[in-house]
Image (cartoon, rainbow, N blue to C red; front, side, top):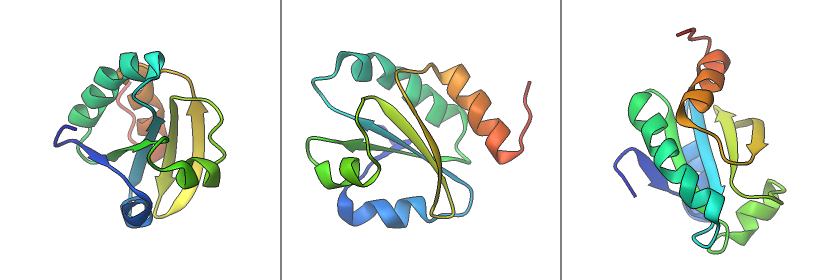
Length: 111
């Protein structure tokens, strides 16, 4: 994992998402083709917006987290603010599209 994206586990997830500001979590698996295609885009988004926290959860390693957030399709990107679940989006997404949504959620308009 890059320095911009944190690998999350059941023991680190709540602390990671409890931060003020946006915490973005990608639920994925190493065997998932769309997940692997999206990974560089997710990394780019994390690099371009260091003010947001980006993490990843391998659903094979952390099935209880996937169940907790009712992840039924991967990749699924979820967004939290101060520990509060804001929403999720299943399916691969590009960096630009992801950042537009995150910037809108944070009140930062870069368009």
